[in-house]
Amino acid sequence: MKVLKNNAKSVRMTDAVLAYVESMDGKGFNEKFENMVLYAMKTEKDREHHIAILDDEIARKRDMLYKLRQMEDKLVWIQRTLNSLGDQVSGLIDNADKV
Image (tube, rainbow, N blue to C red; front, side, top):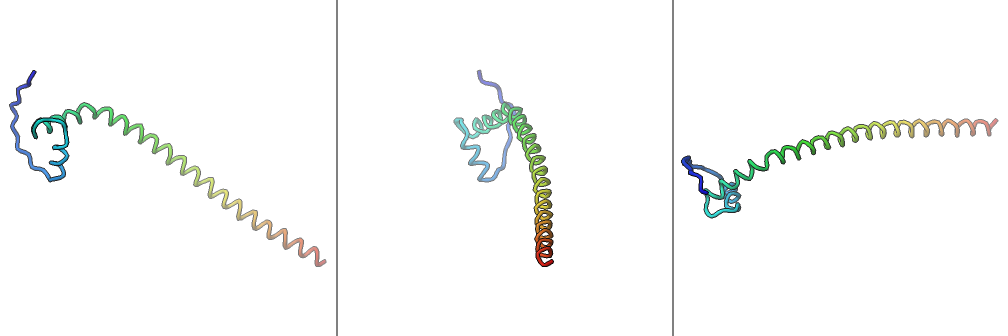
């Protein structure tokens, strides 16, 4: 059943937008444009939900990365401390050998 369309509008757009509209399913520009808008309307909630899930995942990954960087900093500190202790022990051994 055809729906009466009493809203006539003129639209200006870039070549890129026109090419996108023309790539939609439909017989002419008006039908293609309407199909594009209807598709966007129908899928908007799903896309927003998907984006929210991805945002949560990004936040979790950022937290994990922050914790890993903290652990790395601690490991670097431990490594430096152990190297320093190793140098001190070597120095003590050398001194003990001299005595």
